[in-house]
Image (cartoon, rainbow, N blue to C red):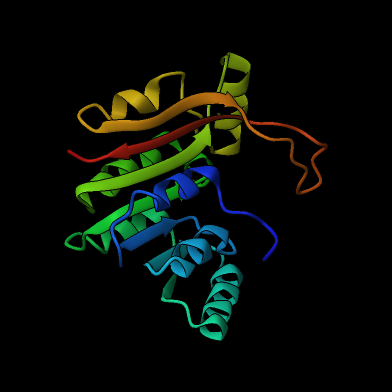
Length: 190
């Protein structure tokens, strides 16, 4: 895990954050982005539904003296429990797509609400390129954005990065080597 670099959107975000920011990392997994952010001097609230991922992240953050608080839970449930908290940035890298459309849109609405004025949202998620991909995602209980869809959801925000392109080659969970078509967004509120 320590050899996995942070997501490029997170690297870009880090250059824009004010000192001692508070960042919410949704779907943090084992914490590659949370650790990177915390090592730069920021506080991170890291959320993942997998208890073992959060436990490992907390153990590492304690060993390394990092300011990371971990919560095990569903993205929307945790966001709904934090209605008055405000974050300098909310990061959600490759987690939204594992939810049905209504949950994805609820999560984005809540992400936007808990972001401070002039704060940031960084999102990477799947894009579906046709009916076949869309049907496959729906059967999995997942959601893939249509082209341009996420950009429209962030109307009124300043778009710092927006792209839709093939991601890197990867192999996991018994699937053959493959690439996902991804949307990448880094936007500033206000």
